[in-house]
Length: 419
Ligand SMILES: [Zn+2]
Image (spheres, protein in one colour):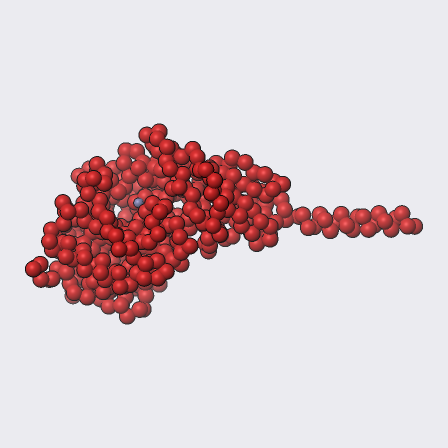
């Protein structure tokens, strides 16, 4: 019965083909999760290619952030992802330059926990195309390694569980009712009322996810057993807020230049945003207690910055002593921030020529509202390099911690007057 044998073989072959294709389902894109943002332009199932646009609403800040899930992947296949940033607009209707949304390397994960970078993408006009071999049935792609409110909550809860000196607390609830997680590292003891205080915060601009990763690297170092960290905890308490603009991070919006103004233009007598209002209240009280010595605000800069750098005090707010201490702080950080991301030599400032609301920038407000031994400063960590990933960002954070520890070996409150 040769005919029957042929059909048996045909059946077996078709079963084998069906099994091989079982994993290669329809590619499906979703951004319906915390921090997600993508508008699907096209999915070509035959070419296994996906094209999206960032989906942020310009009213809620520059729509440069994007983050989505792809399911239906056959493990081992290569997927191509294109982001079209040709239609980015600011809240005032003006075009937003596409490079804000197009990192050379995209962030990539198969579990939403471990984030790698793709290889360099191919840019054309206002788009960029990345290809990635995916060894899983689903994958996530993003502008940079995401760090969402759930990550902030987990981080502060975990550190407070693991370390007796750490207390997690709620900085405030946002206008939309979300909790802003924060923590304080502090030891009890007879000097508890006079110990120095450091305030470190990230994500006044929601899309700048790298700031939270730098912050995580810093705070995990600060509670570690490294001798410099142990020594720092003996002399200073540390406040840490991983995400200031929780609402826009949760909804996948950019935050920067949102209406009426963003968190980092809000440090005024009448703050719009609850996290700013509460941070100001804490800082004023710590200043009243004569304890605050350092305020660090963590950001990501423009796409062309190859190295981390500090925004320093504009001349309008720099007394001689303030400048001397700021220089000493940066010099201490320079000794630590060497690899993989080396601290840049340039130290621009955010004075009247930088922004109309320059006085309402957090570090400028700190400079104007505190005693002159307080250093208020902004650290901008580059996001468009092969090290702008969790490992690279967290290394910068650890090195920031070591720089702070070096700088505070001498209490700036008792530093001699400038020459
Ligand atoms: Zn920023």
